[in-house]
Image 1 (cartoon, rainbow, N blue to C red):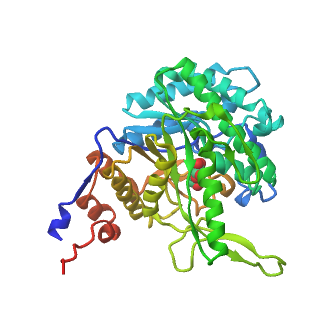
Image 2 (spheres, rainbow, N blue to C red):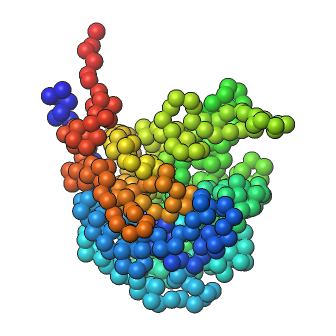
Image 3 (cartoon, helix red, strand yellow):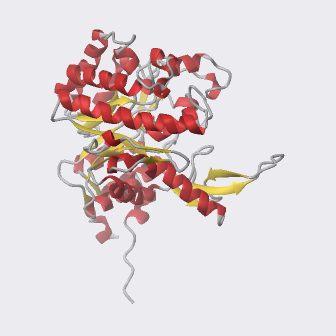
Length: 452
Ligand code: GAL
């Protein structure tokens, strides 16, 4: 045990340590496609919750939470700007909103936190939603115009830009599965939206570079571990989902077509528009062929195998070490520096999060040690927040700090203390794990086995 207690897993110098947040989930008082959807009720969102005041970032609490991030010895923070605030009507720019974001960015810098700014994190202005959102042909151009405006107004304070958060999740949830607005269920529309998001990214990349040549621009891609549950069909299903969800979108960035098997399209302007890529990893999904009672046909189902640690509902298996193969795979697809732009776990009582975080970080460290260019890590999330269709369902608490949404009171969780110690040391050490996540100690620092 004494030797194991000396172990120190050091991260590269200059590694960025932060947390990730998104405007609609924390700001409060937004008017966009999501707030309109929330207002409809009817079970669209857990408990018919509305985002409401969220974490009150817009009205001043952002700075209080930035102070918390700084207390964690973070040197970066990922946040998003809300398109509907900055451009409330097409072509009309709200200078007061830009001023508020400027103040937030100044506050981050004053606290030694390098901002990473996301331009699209699932929400659309209502005027855009009404004209068909990303199905509309003009949207990539309108998005690039918005990106240029933000880069002009805020670009002195921002180097790291994330154009779009999880394009495949947005396309699938909103146009295939239909859980998110506008709740369509169409394979054709899903494909068209994914293609438009690629065009939007490419147009925004060029628009930002024209204004701020030194900007470093990428997007954030959710990558799932997809494994077969049942033999044969499970294998085929897993291979298919892995390709469609994890790989297809990168075709145009490598000079190939965006190929969704049943349809493909060429988007040549996407080539060369990634300075970095963001990895978002949460869970492993296993693919089963299953038949629900009364159904005539079996269907593919994603879930965690029995007996494995799992998240709520269809969250999947909690498999933190799987971030390592996801990092390696993403690097093979993109060959650019990687930021982990999100990783986290829904865990209201913080019983899983410290070990989950420590095990995740060990895997990220392994990637760094194997010379994968991982430049930073943004944990999801700094504070509990509004979790989209899950609303404020108490099972979906992700924060290093808990939030009481009645009183806005924050409570520091054990995982925050773990993260603070890691970020201060730029290392995951045995002493830190022993103190803050002892339940993960033997997994992270296993007893050396004698050589036979
Ligand atoms: C991501 C998303 C975040 C957050 C997180 C936790 O897919 O980008 O906004 O909701 O999942 O579920």
